[in-house]
Length: 225
Ligand SMILES: C[S@@+](CC[C@H](N)C(=O)[O-])C[C@H]1O[C@@H](n2cnc3c(N)ncnc32)[C@H](O)[C@@H]1O
Image (cartoon, rainbow, N blue to C red; front, side, top):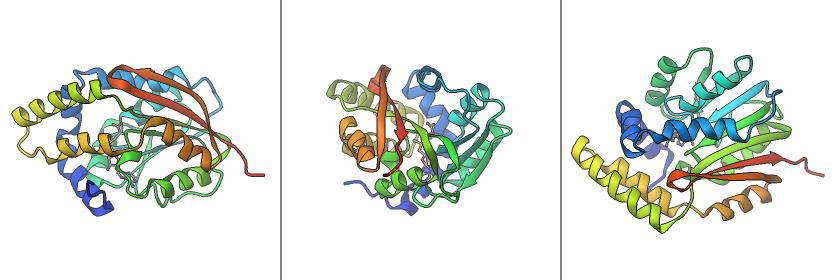
């Protein structure tokens, strides 16, 4: 099992921050930006999303797409890595970026219409706590837009090869890229994750698949009776 202690995760993302966007462009052949854009635009049909939280915001890719789609909404990005956030602040204007953990969200109950979390939950050791926190800060009938890799032997093999080659050629420190592959392999399959959400009263609305077996999931917060 890989070490996902919060300090280790924070240090790793701090270390790779300056190469994070470049590496994403290489290993996805530039497709990650298109996938992220489609993911935000395909399933979100609501217009009245006034308050949005982007969890594990990283270098701000999702915050930027959200700001373009919802220019009048209040958007906040949260991440544990100050170095990733520095880059997000340079990339995206009119979005508030906060250093903090999704396992202890510094927001009031029932305050957000939408939470996005892209390629994030599998990095969080106590992901159940993060799901509970997201539930707490979402308004009743608030939505979660979740994107991550699904499980497939075929894409794992191709992806592993691309990541290993690119990491070896262009980057000296390949631990973070090995981590990326391992965290993908070790995290639960997509239907188990939907069940985790369901146990916290968060229901599946819709799912959609993209290239590299990336799976987009739209979920809804139900109110406890
Ligand atoms: C793979 S990156 C994804 C970044 C961005 N969402 C994207 O799609 O490009 C994962 C991010 O999650 C952050 N992260 C990891 N654990 C976290 C936690 N407990 N709370 C908030 N952010 C966390 C990392 O610092 C990193 O920036």
